[in-house]
Amino acid sequence: MAGHHPCWYCSSVKLQEIAQKLGEKYTTVRYWNQLLMDAELVAPKKGMGNSYVFNEEDFEKFRQMKEFLHNGAHTTFEAIRMMKESVTPAEALERYKHAQRQIEVLQKKVLQLRKPFWKRLAEWFKKLFSEVLFPRTEQ
Image (cartoon, rainbow, N blue to C red; front, side, top):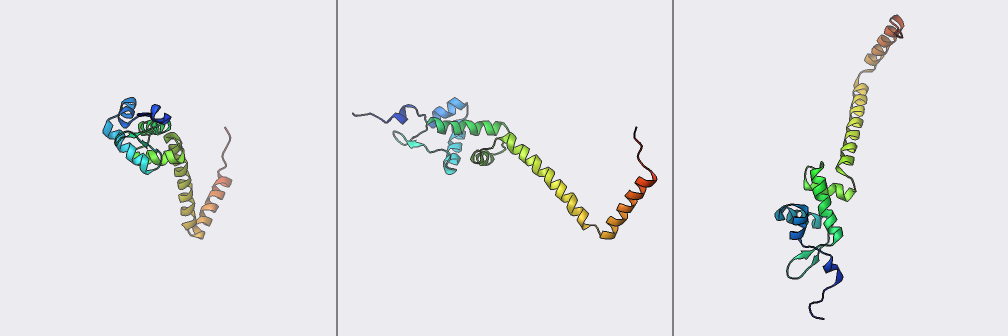
């Protein structure tokens, strides 16, 4: 049958339509498309002519890109990295904060280890005597 196309074409959209549905500029969506294709997150099929057509799953990646950029991802590359790791910007921020706390604890431990032994011993004695001579009173 002439002009017949496979079923995936009926439920697919072009970049222009994706841009309209997302309320984004066509050039922005085209840029996202290139990055998403390079990251192998979308796999558009060749449509009629030179245009690509995207299925619902591909469209979801574009929607997710927009959402991530509006909710904490600072760059498209950061958004793609989060998409590949299946992490939301909020989860990534929480991981970052947790890592920062761990770094601070480790830095304090390193500083303690760098102190000479006699200095640590002197501080321990000072603390011990201050607690014995000036005990904290419960109020």
